[in-house]
Image 1 (cartoon, rainbow, N blue to C red):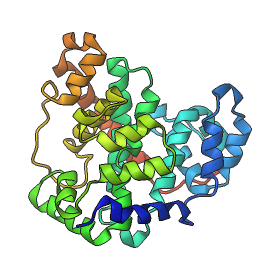
Image 2: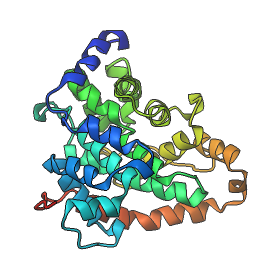
Image 3: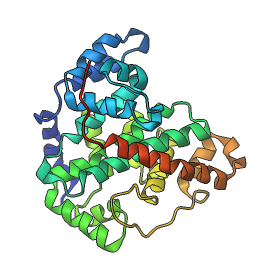
Image 4: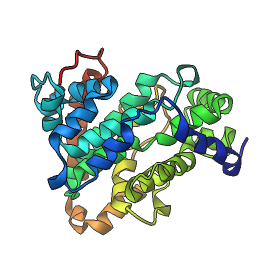
Length: 300
């Protein structure tokens, strides 16, 4: 068992890891400018410098999510995806590299399938309820479990015990983390998100996606990711084990928070909403599987 104060120096060390791509800082700075000022060719140039990020852009641009386009160049992928989706891919690739191969306590593809699945469900749910920024929901869904990567690096032995016990007992991973580490991925993820200057709403999601009631900002976004995370974990896009839990959408605190922000949701047919999400699950699963194919050849 450790305290957050004990692990803080080790989290700060993640800033200087050589595995974090050198292009991330200049590229994210470029992407966060006013869209009218972002130069497409500069984005293409920076993305092309990193083969993993470039390949990921091509995978997603060619996925069913974008109509199975025949996208063969980084330039066409950047145009197809848009600035916000490119930022999500860059940050996802960046956080992926903080975990050395020997530190993975769970299957890496299982982890990223859950994160990408949550991103896709979050975007779809955001559109269904009328949330103004579905792309921000996608980004937050992709990054919500940042702290799991942190815990695998800085508390590898304790985290391995935690996930093993979660598998054996069928309890949520964050509950097992609290028992065996003394804190959860929500707390450690928040620390790294603040160090890396993530936006305040995405940081709130990372901190509170299992604790919606205590979120004091970005409440609708936190609620969307909370519900999407649950839906994924109940539908074979979780952490690779069965969780003994049920999802009562109407009775969940996250749904109550959404209704406060979107009063019209009181009249929404929740069964129909859930059916719509369920109906998209096969498509979402296909997209997730398509993304995790071998890297395609990359052309600018």
